[in-house]
Image (cartoon, rainbow, N blue to C red; front, side, top):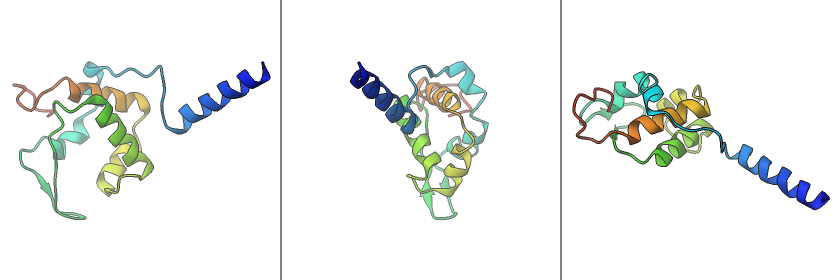
Amino acid sequence: MKRQVTIAVLAALAAASTGASADVVGNAKAGQGKVAACIGCHGIPDYRTAYPEVYRVPKLGGQNARYIESALHEYQKGDRKYQTMHANAVSLSDQDIADIAAYYAAQTPATPNNPYK
């Protein structure tokens, strides 16, 4: 019994340390209200940043939700090195990230009437 409890505690700690949460489910409709900061760069066709380096900013519409979630968590932790994205991601909760990812995953690059691509 003690061994099973130890294994369960270790599993919970591993999930917490990776930012994983089984009860966080993305809501695309809620995500629509959370992407205002994203569209300043990701909503401009063929946009390239100039600082701190020249970088072609990708469109997010149609991206896989898990990929977006993973990328935002990596920016939060500093595992991905881009200061602007880190600054935006650090203030997001796990629920915010899941909602934003669900919103963009529900889009396609050609989705009409979608100013939030």
